[in-house]
Image 1: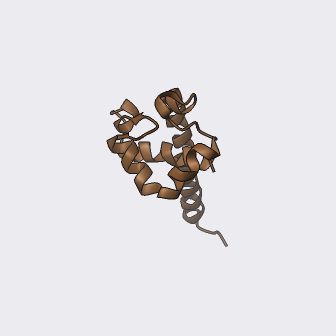
Image 2 (image 1 turned 90 degrees about the vertical axis):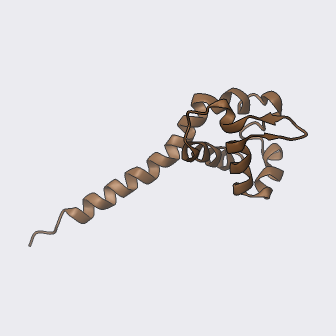
Image 3 (image 1 turned 120 degrees about the vertical axis):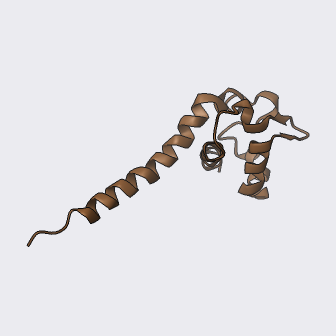
Length: 105
């Protein structure tokens, strides 16, 4: 008896897309965000600096997304809309944020 191949293909393709989304956040971060968030320029919280991220993470992901997408000026510094990379989609910015949060917990 032959089993259908389709379920296996669907499972593999679905797994490919979910792991690609995680990789894309890191790739996007490394292609631009690292310029400020790697060195702490203009008050940007450095990725991996748990103390710098703890209060931001506590505000919730939606607030972080809003600040990253629309820009924000706080007491520590300035976040330009999309980090100045206006060619990025909202989903790409969110993927980079998700990567930075995960790396900073």
